[in-house]
Length: 291
Length: 159
Ligand SMILES: Cc1cc2nc3c(=O)[nH]c(=O)nc-3n(C[C@@H](O)[C@H](O)[C@H](O)COP(=O)(O)OP(=O)(O)OC[C@H]3O[C@@H](n4cnc5c(N)ncnc54)[C@H](O)[C@@H]3O)c2cc1C
Ligand code: FES
Ligand code: FES
Image (cartoon, rainbow over all chains, first blue to last red; front, side, top):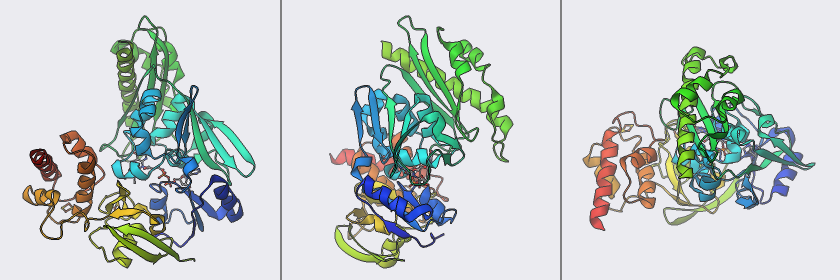
């Protein structure tokens, strides 16, 4: 259980890191929090010849608000974002999502960018960013590309990041006046989910649903967006019955994962249950904000 | 492969060691520095036995590389124990049967050490969250939770 040998570089600026990434070529890999990469190194599922450490690049770990846009540096620690009052107030779904990511020691090191780049199908952060329609800012020696969340996560452990690119920043529109919830079923708290649901709900002055977003994660290679369900909720007052009826429109054919221990049939049962809980909880929180 | 000279502080003492980049911090602590109190169970992030404190935050020693420790302040279970006798956390674990074989204990002690360093009156929920990443194959956890509750009470009484 020991990693194979590799060379190690700890650049101090993003430019330096991009230079290294280009000069070291396809054998190089960046390391962020190491909470997924180091296990892969230990199990020798990954054997890069060069590791480029992003931990000493301060410019990558800032959270700041510019107008209505929140800029989150890719190296922002999950624990830092979870404790951030800016995140809690402006991006509540990210806050609730991060509560479900691992444990205190893994969140203290693990980063937001690392989680998004790793693209585990059961990870919470890709679902959260899809729900926010966030933009991923990729940097390389050639410049910058901005990729919307729905084109960023491409499959199991697969993203739009090209060789030579680093995810530098995530840009999200602030959503202070809505309710949000992320609900998941896992064997133990902090374990990867068997199915998860992320919901955002904002209400009109009369208490009916003005806008809602629903994402289900951990059931297919990429998180799934269910606009048909949330379209049906628009203009409605939430109740268990109303939400259940809308969830009839969830296309369960999109669920794919079928494992020995967690069957497709089971995921199709718990997916809508997680979605119902997330929508109702987000709605309750949205109501709470109106009071 | 290049060796790196790395300097950091462990349990208040400055050290400088030569490491291979592929060595985990836990291996450097145990191997080069002889601090074998930090245990290695799974060596891939699952069990929490290797939990240490790095710059005031809990971390899995098997998921950090030794080279990444440059300039860091590290606390291991050796540094979290008084020179003689037991710490409040250790004493409570002993008293409430918070350990049997003891393999997970250094990680538990460090996870609880961090919890009490940021929160002297945690709720049961907060205690469970703090040790959620630590596996124990012996105790069934209740003794550990009870011990942590006792620590919280004793800290309150001291204040
Ligand atoms: C016990 C345990 C439980 C966990 N539970 C959960 C969970 O419930 N939910 C969850 O989502 N995750 C969970 N994780 C994984 C999570 O902790 C990791 O933090 C996350 O998956 C990866 O983030 P990282 O910063 O550690 O990245 P690393 O492990 O350093 O990197 C992961 C991958 O992303 C690439 N990468 C990292 N940053 C960038 C970047 N900026 N640009 C381009 N590529 C990059 C790396 O090259 C590597 O391939 C768990 C991990 C452990 C050990
Ligand atoms: S040895 Fe580090 S988590 Fe198991
Ligand atoms: S006491 Fe044996 S593993 Fe915890």
